[in-house]
Image (cartoon, rainbow, N blue to C red; front, side, top):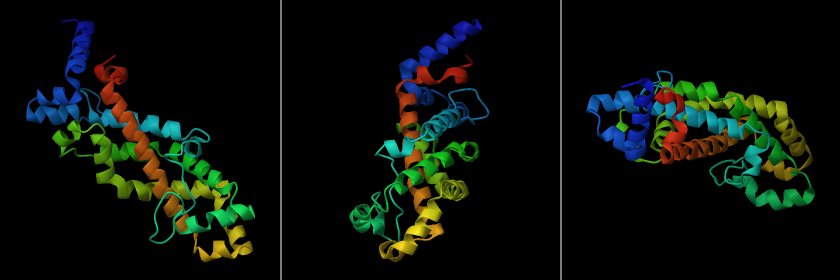
Amino acid sequence: MSTSNTIIARRSFIAGLGVAGAAALLPAGAQAQSIFGRRSGGGGLGLGSILGNATDKALDKLAQPGAFYDDESVRIGLPIVGNLGGRSGGLLGSLMSAGNRLGVLGGITREINDAAGVAAGEAKPIFREAIDDLSFDDAPGIVREEDGGTQYLRQSSNDRLHSRLQPLVDGALERAGVYRTFEGLANEHSFIREAGLSRESINRSVTDQGLDGIFSYIGAEERQFRDNPLGGLGNLLGN
């Protein structure tokens, strides 16, 4: 069979069965090799490659100016402090209306989101390394979930990704002047001081919320690929 016919046959096979169906027809050992090949290894349907492409696309989208802030589903709120959760800003949530009336919190949320976008744009190597290190021991379960690869990446690598992303967030917040802004506000307004914010807590909160947004976007990209594998396989199929 010619190379072009082989590519067409492989595409038809995937279109008819989907990624999960293709995995089910392979011998057990071949499933892990073909479906969960490393991102850098190419070949097969490689979930590592799928995840790598999904991650790159997600980070590219979130790195665009205003991307975090403009999407309310991933917009990062004012730093969460203590054990109070919620994207609205945790301990500061109850003080938001007062702060807004005072006109002191106006642009800082946008600055925080812009800083997270800068960090996202610098994070590709971190995610690629995490994907390359995945063992995919739970391969059958991962295949069946629409965003199974994303879920597995988060479960297995979240802490490491968080620790690696924090310095990027820290640098972006510093360059954006967020820390300096909070320090100035704390000197002028007691409700900011009483929130107990520190450089560490601001960084941790932004990193936590930023990762939530990144994984949300990665999952959406993975689901899109699974819904339309022919639209995303590209070089995985040798084309």
